[in-house]
Image (tube, rainbow, N blue to C red; front, side, top):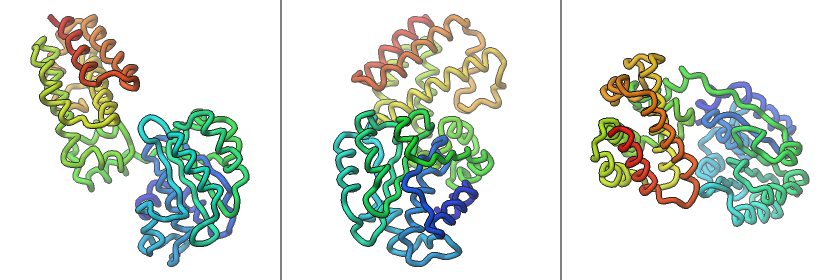
Length: 330
């Protein structure tokens, strides 16, 4: 982990290790940048550097009990929070506030790491202002968000903002190859996220390959006007989709597939270079479809994105959209 984040964000790592060594850490930082740029890893690295008992070359060892507890999110003085579902819940904020009010358990230092800080409600964010601005004791807080504009301005003004640059594509492809990801899948994965940890999760038990395969089959039935597209949802897709995050990814994949279909139709991408390698046949067939059909279908698919975060059955939404698109291709 240490070597990897050093490679991805060399300057930021060097800067923060020196800040710790010289006892010049600020009380609060806002880390911004796209997912996968290493914001969480740098925050954890700083925490490890603060608590490590075997610092080497101004870096934590990554192997001592202190470092391992932080990596396993088991250290009592390193408090971590991230959204449960769509937002950071009231109970989570209450817990964070209570921890801000307590002294460190095993020393003088406490570290707070709040992922997706933009997912806090205005009320929740405001309730943390005092604790972030005037922490009790030696406390450093790391807030993580894709963009500073998404975070309450009063929070931003009380932090030092650190912008993380995107990781170079060649480094990401090297890491994906090390993870055993097939070269044919890498462009599609990297079009969805640069977060290697997220990609690892998607690839557990070959889940990503399976869901992409079933979406491509559904799309094949769909553009052929084959009613099997409807049963494909219940029989093949839904058994693979077990949570809200997977639902969102399925929609991302469907939208990306249809966008690529349009690119192929208008000659903006060669079929040999498509991200959905298993969909070459139907993407080639798409060139014979009318623009009106494709745009109507894409419009109905995009409508699903606005419905996924409300209390609508995901399966019902997919099925009703499928029936609507089948009617277009009749």
